[in-house]
Length: 113
Length: 118
Image (cartoon, rainbow over all chains, first blue to last red):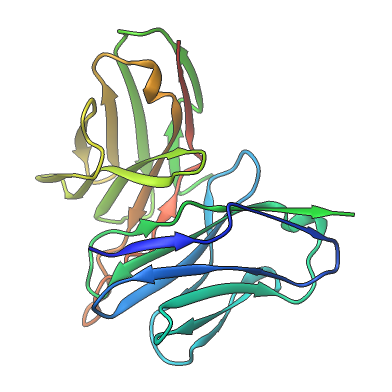
């Protein structure tokens, strides 16, 4: 069965600094990969997804992620964060043709002024 | 209006009470899901349904039941609530996939129902 590990439970950064949120998955077959964001007191919304093709995926709000098949990773990056990026971020994986997503534990991103 | 609507948004109840969380969607999706979110544990799947006649257990179904009343409605019940069921519950939907393509698993979430069991 596939699993997802988000390596950092909390990431504090200063405003305008770069950030990377790490995600590794385990699966012996091809997968689809997702990052979701949860702003305070809200539901989850899709940030970006990798289905196929280019391994560098661009999402909303200036975020991007790179799929690395050999390292089974899908790390999320942003070159310059803003206070409004304060949220919890979830990495998720589904098998191609699969029926449900498996989520990581979440990473809480805190932006300090 | 939200595409996926959950009610109630917040509920406080006592141990042993029966609770129902309701979910309705206007996205026209066939697949519906219930997840619970706990700090440090991410989202864990409780039940999922691919159509009105197809309901499946997720990884943490004990203590829960569901009902798919229609394509657009999927409710979650706690027959006898206990304190460790205190959590944030999310309903989500997924498209079957357009003709010729497979479903990717992408989910569309409601805003969540916060349940506290005292």
